[in-house]
Amino acid sequence: MSLSTDYVPSRIKSTDPLHEPWLLTEAEREVFRQRSRESRLRRQAALDGRGEEPIHEVNIPQFDPMALMPERDPNGLPTLSLFSGGGGLDLGFDRAGFSHVGSWEILSDAADTLKTAHPEWNVHGGEDGDVRGVDWNVYRENVAIVHGGPPCQPFSNAGKQRGAADPRDMWPEFVRAVLEARPDVFVAENVAALASATFSDYVEQTILARLGRHYRIHRVLLQAYEYGVPQVRKRVVFFGFRTRTIERRWVAPTPRFRRTGAPANGLPETMGVRAALGLPDTGFDDLSPTIRSALSGPRHTTSILSSVSAQKRFEALRIWPNGVAATREAAQAFVAKNGHFRLSVPDVALLQGFPESWRFSGAVYMQLGQIGNSVAPPVGYAVASSVADALLR
Image (cartoon, rainbow, N blue to C red):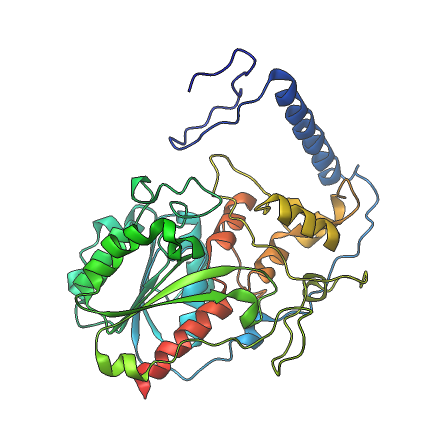
């Protein structure tokens, strides 16, 4: 489609081949430029101590994700982790008692996050973390589990949903790893859209047709808040069992919490965002909207907004989700334009179910990208525990 002469290109060039720029007039682009300039100036003023007087106390969170993942006894079952990212599945499987053999992650900063959290782990990062160059046959019969979350951008509602036409589609590599390593069980996580009719042919041809010859496969949709994470976050998890015996022993993860504000049903209530972060009671609290990965677009961002509806929900919660700060002290100093509470990286990590002790590496946008792309650790723990129970019975 040719551009109308009323539209002008952005002055900021993107190197992302999948970037599809907005069609904006010069006047519309100038509005965005002014907002960006104003935000940069206000942020710099806050960093220099010339900003507005802070209006919020530095928060002390009341939510402890580790309480949702009681450490299980070591079971000696070795695992391989692909597309490890910020470590949501890795942490879940570790807390469930599994033995770590190796993690592969192409983003160097994400690999550094894993190395910092667990210096004893065997982490392959950067070029060494590219799964396309690994011969998984060397692990054949020597690992019990292969788990991972292939990049979700080819299937996400927030993306272009190109599926197999997207160069970031790494499902074929995950399938290759499973077929070469031949673990007892494989676990693969992705966005819920992958379980929709839109990608039914893709799932059948790329995943089920190839792995179904050797594994009995089950698809389960899991919602993060049903495992105590204060966020609306639905994901699909594929479980593959090499033998019928293991399959018969397996029980799919079941909800452990009820949604914030839902009628009593015998399950404890998931904390709302404000309660989880230790913020003052305003008379309204609810779950966080789905946290967007800061790496999902063609340019760096420090916003976690995933949609217009998410923006409205954050406004109702009186929380500012744009310009996430590196620390709670920096967030306090950088007063949001509307006076709402500004989030920090540790706050966002907490809302994803990561403990305070899990430190992310890289620039702020990279840290947010790792968080937003990760499996919520308590969900990963529930998944890992269900697999452990099936293998150890």
